[in-house]
Every structure is written in structure tokens, then in C-alpha cells.
Amino acid sequence: MQSVLRRLYSFYKWFVVIPMLGVTTFVCGMSIVALVWFVRPSTLSRIFAQSWARINSWVTPMLVSVQGRHHIDPTQSYVIVCNHQSQYDIFVLYGWLNIDFKWVMKQELRNIPVIGIACDKLGHIYVDRSRREAALASIEAAKTRVTDGTSVLFFPEGTRSRNGQLKSFKKGAFHFALDLQLPLLPVTIEGTRQILPSDTLDLFPGRATMTIHAPIDIQGYRRANIDDLAALARQKIESGIRPGA
Image (cartoon, rainbow, N blue to C red):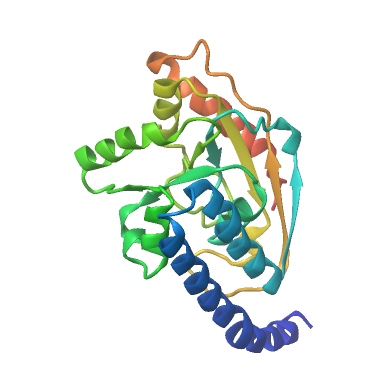
């Protein structure tokens, strides 16, 4: 029965979901590029980026539930750290986190038509991971954008997990938090790997859950014990992953 459903869904995927993604990406992206001269990027992100994420989630369909929203103070800037299992994580975060944030994105994404320039106009942070000095300069410049309730989001694993297990964490997010003296906001996403596994187009409807954990106060942490800070954040994120999920 599952194989029959997947074959039937394949027609819907190619003739509805993927065309809708193309249309909404073009319309929302070009609207951002056209309006950024007149409207604040945070407002454009709330209107167009959130709409883009929710429309494509509903069309898939992907149902999203959120736990722990009460942990967010909308006036506080955070360094958000989140696990990464699927491209659909982007829809979950954009569509349901409901705070203004900047992504830390690999430089190659700048070359994607419409998306690349729209993300640039929204103030997201492109990092050239092949050139250490350029990457550090990008992160340094980004620090001026994280104020007055605007946060920055890292996938500290650096890339998507192919098996659902948390990979080791890189330290960039934690250096950023220490430099700006901002609390960490750990977030766990579950279910997206079953909707769209990494490195495939094997899309199928499903449910995703986003768990927002209590913020981590970085007071008392220094570069000397940054590994302890990363371990604590990883522990919180891992606590939201069900065994076998």
C-alpha cells in the first residue's frame, strides 16, 4: 500500500508541489528584491519568507507542531542553534519560529537564482568556508545585524545529518555567542528527514515537530571552556530527538 501511495503522490509532487515551489520562490523572492528599498528587511521576511515557507509546507502537505514557544522573549536577540536533517527544516524555521533572524549560509547558495539575491537583500550571512579569512570577515560584519530582537541562526553540524543522528558541532556559533554576549537558543526539528531525505527528491507528506528549548545563559563561559558550552547545547538539542526517529 505504501508503494502505491508513493506512486500516486509522485504525480502530485511533479505537477503541483514542485511547480508551486518555483512560482512562490520567484514571486516572493522578486517581491523582496523590489521592496527592500522601501520596507524593512524584518518586515519583508515576516510577510514573504514566512508565507513562502507556509504555502509550500501546506501544499506538500507537511503539518508542523511547535513546542516551547514560551521560551522565546521577542525583545531578546539570540544565537539560535538547530539540528539539520532535511531541506524542509528551512520551511519549518521560516514558517513557524516567528522571530526575525539571519541565516549563516554557505557561499554557494548565493548563486541560486532569485533565492541568492533575495537572501542577500534580507541581510542573511554568506560564508565562504573554503577561505578562512573571508569566512571570519563575513561573520565579523554580521555582528552588527544582530540587535534589538534580531537573532542569528546556525546549523552547528555544518551540514545535514544523513541518518538522523546528531553530528559533532562546529564552534562558530558558540564563539559568536561569546563575542556578542548573547544567550543560545537550542532548537530541535524532527520529522523532516522522513518528508524529504537528504540528497533525494523522494518527497512524501508527513508531520514535523519543532521543539524550542529554554535559552542557555552564557555567563561563566569563556573560550577556555567553549567545548562545555557546545556540549550543553548539543545535549539539549539531542533531548528533543526521539529514539529511532
